[in-house]
Image (cartoon, rainbow, N blue to C red; front, side, top):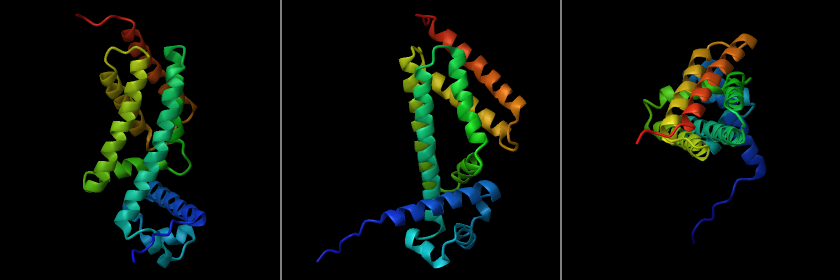
Length: 207
């Protein structure tokens, strides 16, 4: 007789989510190399042996933590893309994009730092590389579709450009939480970029 797979309980799902959140916090705060099953169990308030119920080992834990983070980021991207589509000016677009960047940089759990830890580690782990690539394509696709609906003549190129600008701002500010002056600077940079993009959409491309 075939064995039946018992679906996880709501309590089990919540406990696993808590463990993944704790892993992300440790990675963002201390670095991926400082994450161990023992340190995770201690900080999550979970018996060390119980972690084996949710993860076969550290590699699976790291992969699932990365994917959990990317799922949340894609929801943020989708919300920002929706807001951009309803923006009535380039300045309004810049405001939504700046809010997206600042929210990531000011996360109390250092999730953005964890994200870049994962991206660097993906150069060494094929499993993480696949997740990272899928995330990049999804992010680019969201922006590309949004720019296309707004009338961009090269939505794919504009999406790549915007992703490069956003990543550059994030990396430049990753080591320090942005203060009011830095936030104003982020907005100014994105205002310039969105103004240039917006103006190019109003000009017919060369034949």
